[in-house]
Length: 538
Image (cartoon, rainbow, N blue to C red; front, side, top):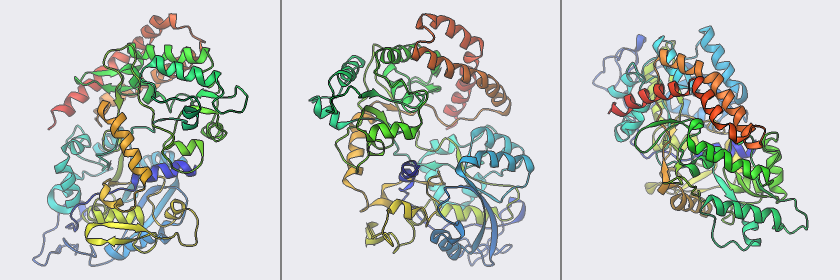
């Protein structure tokens, strides 16, 4: 679990270099208050510039998921925010594993918090609860000057705005934005010790070369223990490798994706999907794919890696599976080409979270002040505070004018990342904000630079965002959800059967007929319509 939280926090440890100081009035019913000449709101005493945001103390209820490292009220970051803004937060926190259930109960009960933070609000939830008036539209406060940092980002990246604008024209949630992101899911890595033992000078570039390499792993004892205990390729239910491997057969996404011409596809009925299944079935029959793939846990997979048995595997970083320290000895897998022309391709990160990370409920008495509060997290200073804590705890400025920092020793010793989880809520959960290298200047390691180089050489040239964050209407969503419920279950079951040989691939045509009977073509129609709307919404 520690490694998972590290991975998600690494995604969050960058932020934006953007202008500070938002202006927000506050009034009930979401109407902007009249501004006075002194820069404050006459009606509610909410300053348009500077801090604190409010003249009188304001208390708001904030709901979030929680990694469980510390009491948020005692976290230096949240204490600093209260001191800075004059806004006190009452926390309604739920453990990560049970947050989705708690969120559903909250919506059903109507007992709303004022703020949903790190809320993982799915597009369907935004449409449903936005249209019902449970979540309030945010674009008014953004465009009228209450969130200048956010507005600047949306103006510079119009795809972000249109990807979070629902069919009724409103934005009900804010994303985490990382326009430089590459990985949609964590990628595949080679065990460098195996490469060295087998004298591999050049990584496989085709599916056949990959097969040959894995065959050698099985037969030539690269871990040198005199036993044939090597596992050429391992997985946990194929969920970790599916996205990466799909690209070998020209597919950009695990389910719905748009190709370079804007045509929407349902991956499990594509001809490339048959190629993917055939390839893995070949691996299964020759014991090149771990036969515990469909039964093992992530922890069991990692144990095999730390015993130096795995040749090719998925993880956020290779040392999370293999153990040891960050290093450059275990290379990122180069996607390989298949018999399908134009391969490989790579479904890269769309540059923003697929779900909303922040929303304001209709119960909130001060939406303008709330927007000003969250807007700070989209600034350089706010991102630094939330991601790295206040200056003097874990870091200090080496060159403040140029934003260059350096790490300080961890108070009391121990792991820096574990300690960071006790000072900020931005740990193990996806929170509102934006990623920008400016925030980590001086703090990056040579390993970080190596990762960027690997991505730039192997993934970026063949990458495309699989599918934008589009919204279906309520009616469309109801239909799509009903179709997907049974269809997704069937596809998942058949994938395992085809790979393990329980279902012969000679039954492919029967499978396709069943998938279409269950509504796959209709799902494509629905998402093609949503994609076309998104594409014309400039």
